[in-house]
Image 1 (cartoon, helix red, strand yellow):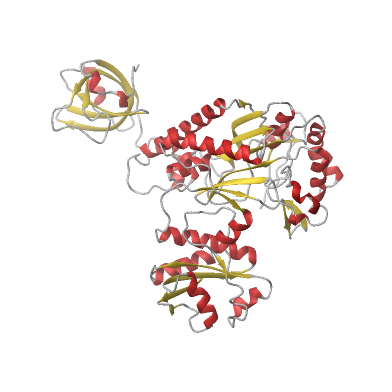
Image 2 (cartoon, helix red, strand yellow):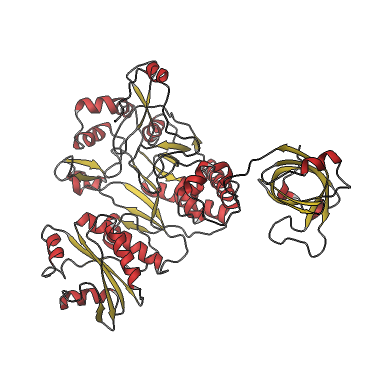
Length: 584
């Protein structure tokens, strides 16, 4: 039916007869002479149909063809006449003079055209994803994703890793996000869970002696709706025995260096810098620092300790914070500043304070009449007396969350961020945090992360002082992976479960099988998981991971293409022993 792709037709084939198949991109009729742009996965080529070179039946079929019709063409490659070349496509110097044309499939008029410049809603794009993926950019993204996955495999195989699949139907061990549950028909009332990650299975593989494991794997998390998250996602999963943190960090740096060079022809500099968790929180307000941002966050709580501004005083009295940053030599319109205020309020805080300075004088601010000289001086220093300083007053946690996102938005809106790939490792995370709602310790990463040996003395007396042997890799302010050295001592693992306030019954039910496995010669081991969706999106400069996933869900977790999630037949529920309660 075809012996090469449309985009593979070139000058070396002039004079040869070729067979092509593809979709009609456009048709131009010049008084019986037709020009058809035919496209397939490889590209586009111009087909010329002359009445004298094609039989009458084929000409009749072509009278009513339109875009998206599928054609089979046989014809001779020839050079385009001088002055008609198209430099915008790879086949622009040649065309194919058709000898035979066959319509393989017809097409209705689509809801939108792949080459439309007007904005198409995401809902419509996802409902007609098969049309959306005909757009050159989407096609490029999906092919690029394939290339990245292929290069990852090539690298891992070259390092003697074994690719092993782990189960999708497994045991529910809820700790963190909710599991997607799958009811068992054979064992009514019992459920499988779809894996949030292959965490325990990859550790079991180390016990089994597979010292270098990896897979590119689908994972599932039933999270609350959040922007640019997917209920199912893909990660590059890696686990190794007899390694330290530095061994895994070096491997990942070499992997990313290889992938960026092979896929983008970009030489990223390794090793990547490292930053402690405390420094990341202090300087950037987040454990996902964008190190391209040219300014740091400062704690001005001390400068405002005697403030007369009531709403700031309210937060400082309950150990809240005043966090701020300044940007030198910029100016902003009132509408830009109001927009930033609205953005801060949308995150649930009290809003954003801004202060415009010229030659060390405060010249504009909603608080200009209420700010003290000491407070002015502290704010002025942030922008060297010329520019704008921004501040947030709130609880410790909320002030950091708001100021870090405002800083990122300011850097973007005022073009302060260079177009580059800035990697950083964040290390020295706390092993635990305190959940005020549940009144218990929770794992900062997951309960299988090893504590630093030098901090083990605090584990019984002050768990919040214990640091983890964990490491996250951040690219341009986005976490693209996280890992740790794992606990391989069953007694220490049991102790961690108890600190997390799990009962003996819960430990046995959820993790008894895993603790038993650790008793049979578990080697020291560690690993990491890299988010493939996020990595590919960042490499391509896409704002959303949905642009690099073939069939993503919407922000509300719905698939417009298939209508999932959907109702099922009562007979199916009965077979599973399930009764559904519906809200009125």
